[in-house]
Length: 338
Figure (cartoon, rainbow, N blue to C red):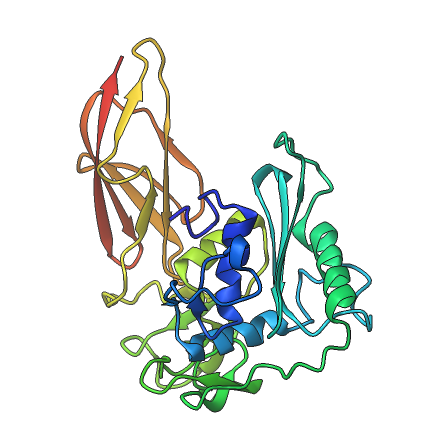
């Protein structure tokens, strides 16, 4: 998984070479220093991605209203007509910016050859202005035609919140490209309708909904992962009221996901110390209470994002987590003492 986030080392030549495939409808040719001005007839191109996917990616990388646009460039006429992407490595050791048009692909790296990080180093603020300057120097006001959408692409309205097909509650819809039979046809679900009491303190399901004296309201349909992130970062969000406490319905939803400790892992502790292991989970939007069990014995009740710790004993340990909807999940760990 770390590879997706940049956990694999890459050289300036490798990254720039890969981005050059975007400028060639997804077809990759490795760099040939000795045959720079002519095509290498001995080398067969490799199709990395489809022309349709390349065009959609290029469209995204061409947008100017984005977080990695250098400060002061919002209304600058010095931005060349290119697609570009920035990057800053862990510890601010490397500042990257790579861009391309139909004629050139240019890669910029800035950093210390010793690998020492610099606090002010960033791809957006340090490398990208240099990338823009290079493009403006060698290809300013280029008359090259821009990339044209392949025939396999179609356009449709999508919700700007989710990118999915709009639902009746979607207010901000935009026109976007899609690939027939490949792009998702799911309808937008970034909001969900909830029946609540007039005072907004209790929510109802179809099993406990009263005949009258309730209202319908749309709430953000947040995943357990997003709720967990908002809670830990102290970000405010609109919470669904607690479910009717006298309702006995068992919901057909996902059980809480235990994220700490890790399932089927071995934990090594020191015999002389009494280390604690954190119990943590991610639960559904409507869950308010979590119940922890150690080896099938009740341990503690807590809020969904409340920090809970326990002192493990050597051996195999079963950890269970139940929510206030009656849903349960289990993991098993092994503890060794040294």
